Image 1 (cartoon, rainbow, N blue to C red):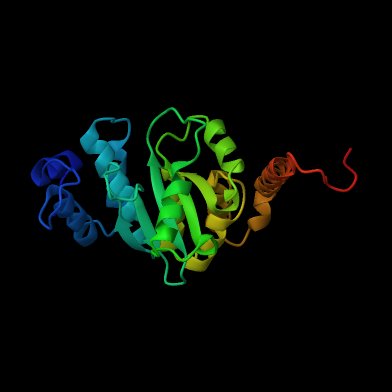
Image 2: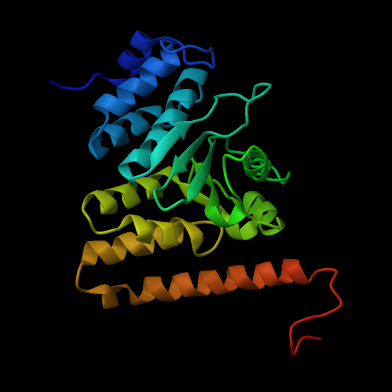
Length: 258
C-alpha cells in the first residue's frame, strides 16, 4: 500500500508543537517515522514535500525528518524541541553513535544567517554541563541547511571565530541524503562517516560530493582527480583562515611571516 502523502499525514496527526505527553501530534508523527519511514525513497519524498514551504507545520515536520535521517546513518536519534522553551536545551536533535560520537543538530531553514555567535556552541556547552555529553572531543555540532544555494559566508565566519571551530560543521540536506544513500548501498561505513563529519572545512558539501563521486565510480577513483584537487585546495584555504584567526592578537607568528 502506498504511503500517505505528507500533507495528509500531517492533517491526521494534528498540529506539531512542544506540548508534553506520549500521544501528542508530535509523538504520533515521530512514531510514524520510526515505524513506517524506514527507506530512503519515502524519506526523500517527504523532505521534498517540505521544500520551499515556510509555514510552521512543514518547518517542524522537516526538522523531525532530518533528525530521523540519522537512523538511516546507523545513529540512535533523540528529537529536540521545536522552539526554545524554559528548561529545554535548544537544538533540533541529537544523533548518538555506538562508538561514542555525538552529533548535535540545528536545522537552518531561514535564508538569512546572522553573524552572531553560533547557537549550537551554547547548546553543546549546556549538554556538557548536564553530563549528557562528556566533552568537546566526542561531539560534532552540525548545522543542516535547507537552502543550499544561500551564501553561508556569515555562518562560516562565525564558526571560524569560535574556539571550538574544529567541531562545528555545515551541511545541506541534499548532501546528507547522498551520504545516506552511499551508506545504504554499503559504500560508506559508519566509521568513514565519522571521518567525514570531523574532517575538512566548516562546509561539508564539497567533501560529501567528493566521497559520493568516488563511491559511485567504484574502481575508478582516479577519475575524480579534479574533484580531489579542489577539495585539497578548499581544506588548505580553510586552514589558512583558521590559523589567521588563531594568530590575531598573538605576538608570535608562523615562521617566515612578517
